[in-house]
Image (tube, rainbow, N blue to C red; front, side):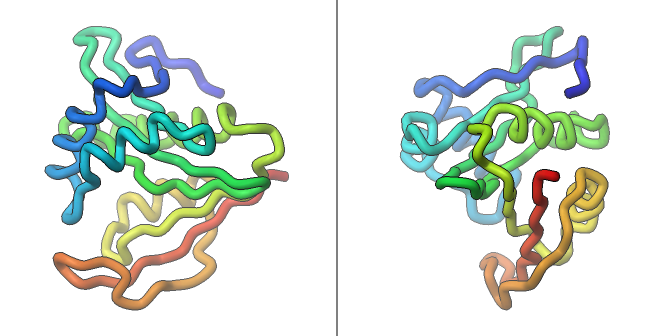
Length: 152
């Protein structure tokens, strides 16, 4: 995994569920609730990594990933707007892959069909489009691309 001097990644704490909900409500059309983040943070089958700025100490990116047996689902991954375009998303994906149980070999996610920036990032990280969920998203209604990466 690449190292960065400007940020570090750690697991979220329960008291950060409020902040993650606030970020999520701004970044996504349908943000997760505080309760959803808290549930993920406390689950033994999920990780909620957060990227923290070394300079300011603020959370600048986060993810929520669930896993069962050899499969993981990236339920959430986001970078705060002013930090986008700096490779933090790829850095988060690398962290996720390194910090799930060794048995996990398949990584799945859904992404809005119009989110070309994220789709390009996932492709650079080794994800392939395997299908589509029609009208998966609301507000606005939109298809989701199903993307998967397999460990080699």
